[in-house]
Length: 179
Image (cartoon, rainbow, N blue to C red; front, side):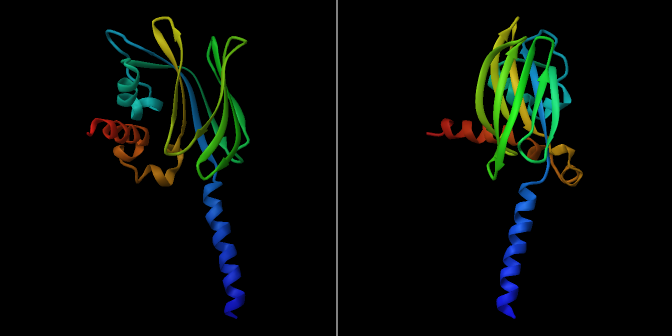
């Protein structure tokens, strides 16, 4: 009897264990203009948890979203666009594993391809990529898994735990400041 139960128990554990890693996740993609202003506007809600880190990393005091997109990834094979008047970020998800989603990113200015790169996006590591200079500012490409959309996690989160990007940056910078 025990010989029959163990294989089924192992099979169920594998099924339930992989189900959580394959759950659909909402990804927010944004085209952001970072610039220094004498009287900066309030940071958009999508970026507010990362505001201090963005200021520290890039040296700008204002972040304005000029284009954005939200896409629910169910299979890890989806693609989408975040567009603005002059720029478009094409995102092609090429699969997922325990480390996150493998992405191909293409940044266009009007119809001209400016840059193409492959990267990985994970829950614990939002992407912020410095793009070209735009006027007196800088274009930033921002992608993050928007776990605030999950009702079961929204109730139990604290401000400190919502900002994994800032925590990672803090730990990273502390490694180099210690001697």
